[in-house]
Image 1: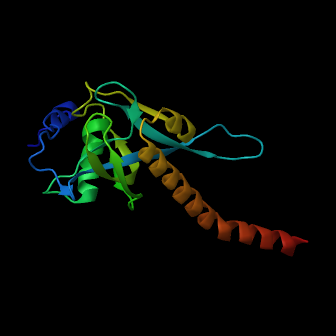
Image 2: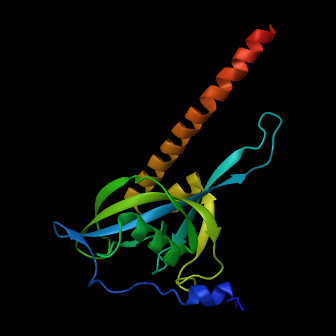
Length: 192
């Protein structure tokens, strides 16, 4: 006999990690990792464009409620960078997905503490959005356009990571479309 457990009970068992005793440090800087959760949303068709895919990113409110940011938190000793980024994104934003190649590393000063951090950011292509997650009652999450996210994000280094993500996705999209456009052009020429 198989017992089905409601999703809310399963995620409720997952609790956010707390404390700093397992945190990683490098040269006195606390190491933090995070993700930029993203998805493609089909937008309205226009006469010139069919099935336009609009890039959306997920931002969350800070725990103190003073602005928006991307999910991030401490990288712990028992985790890989990617694993920690994925965990933080699940805990803070309630999404799961494919963690992609690192966007970069930033050194930044904390706004609330007199200390420096070493931050790593990853893109996360969202495959699942949960209704219940550990920090649901502490944070809001909002899907928005890249332009809107750039406006509301409170950290310069996260905005820079967002720019790197957009550049990477745009470059990849151009590479993917290159052969298709070339073959369409060749077919057009052959018809003439």
